[in-house]
Image: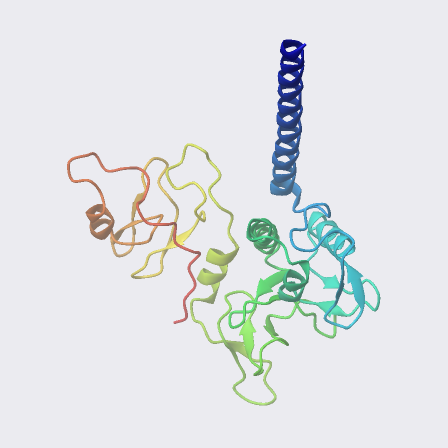
Length: 277
């Protein structure tokens, strides 16, 4: 009887361990599936991190909203490429920074949403821009005739300032009766640099870079070479790396001197160029 009892207990322990491992496996698969969905569509109301889907929080305008309704509203807006967020109760406008504070997502979830927002801004440069001072997202204003204004101001900044919608340089008014003008003589070039598409060819050494770069010395617009990260300016003959924008001499210094020059760059990809001259 003792032997039978011992065998029975061991069998029970084995079955319990298998059941526990099965539950852990299901839980791990669920977490992995949720992460894959979030990478494509954004965080769901079931993965809100600190705030559960039924938790209530006070909105910037004072109304009480649930975390699930807030994240659903954000996901619906992002699917429509709409960055005009507002309170579901009173429709008061909310900035993206206010929304991010209300969601209380994990760092990884916040990065996913920020990436989606930045893609929308890049895809719709005539509709949305980030304020060059405070980086809040702004919708392009319209004039009295319903036409897009060539400049904008930011309601989020403590001090009123105007900037060119195309190149983000200060917009100046020579006199009170003037409609103003962009202060940047290279406005058309910077506008192209900020709004152009990116290189999508998977075989390109400059994948992800803008299709236009400006020569760091003379600001001439240049397109990348198909199989090399280095380009030569046709105007001043300056040679530089299309990825990091450093001169070829400086970029090569980071390479292994005993190996062929790598098609990739040791430095992170430089941001889109903008300058005022």
